[in-house]
Image (cartoon, rainbow, N blue to C red):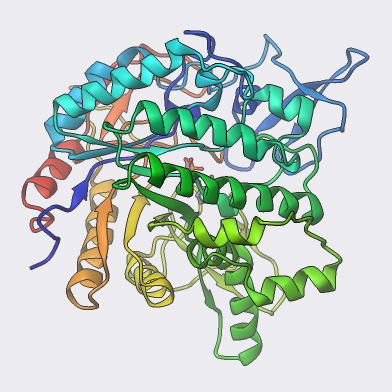
Length: 485
Ligand code: P53
């Protein structure tokens, strides 16, 4: 026995990186629409306008001026607008997923496609219909949709007018949004996730707040935890069979040495980067280490009566997580290399991707075990993969053996976690199963797909789809339920 018989095999995407059609079908603007393309070591920029009409640009990690509004500069390139155009290619793409043998497909819904301003009193029917058509197309091939309710943006109106998640009213607007989804799609979607990588969200455009300080971020998080818990509670009433999960970027870190100082620092880091979020969403209450940290740092979470009860009741059914790489924690302060996401201490035992991400398949088994040991609830690897430059040969073929090797090694470690450790893992959706825009850099050339899309970093290309070597490989993996890697 390796992978269970009904194991979910598929691929994962997100609206802001894949869907496009940003002004079609009545869709409203989202914060991701004012986010320019960048590159490795070239930060993506957020464009904004001030009330006096002056425009500006800032790095994602900067604070946006309090009165600034997201702004589209016609001379700049914003990769979300067309992305890789799932909006117009969904039938073709889903047919290709079916050909690979997918029995599930992870996508995110664009909140502003359904509520153009985020808090409209009625949903936009054309937006709902688009997703209904997509779900029907998937179900036609017996592919289960796996839905991320919100992935890395918010309707721009909510960010501009209310500073998004820093405002408690967001809970009601998100609840309204999720109630509409749950009611409309109750017989078409079983697996949901409330927020993609909730542990990575900060500032504009991901969280939609103008400020990035701890007080703002954690207050916003409190609202998101409540919104997520409320969605779980409501969802279960609408369909008790729903499986509603959290989604966490599993940033595995190792202490650099056996120096207890490194080990303690690593514990702190792991709590800060990920466990705080899963502890709240899986256990239903704030962990003591975080409450102590808030006390020390003067962070005061404003709660209302009943909040604690909602958190307790709205615990998630499963943990969806992304796993790409591992990092190293060290108290030894020396020059660090830039892995594009965070400054990382190099791990001499591991090689790196072209974008500086360490490649660590064994870390997949370790991560699965750490999560399983801590929580004892079902796990779903909803992202994993290698971002790499692909070249198209003269005959049109794309020989991405590096991607096959990366994925095979990671799947082998998932198998080990199931076979050797008894971890309850029920699905795998590798990231960007069809090429899409990179979240970190906004590039097209950082590709993850089994399916190639003809588009470059400036938005030039035919959008034509073609199969890479890994397409045929993954098809065989699925056909043998993971036995033939
Ligand atoms: P890209 C950083 C670290 C771990 C996961 O990332 C991350 C990020 C953001 O860059 O995001 C997830 O495209 C995310 C996807 C994203 C994917 O990882 O930067 O859920 O939206 O595309 C890969 O190579």
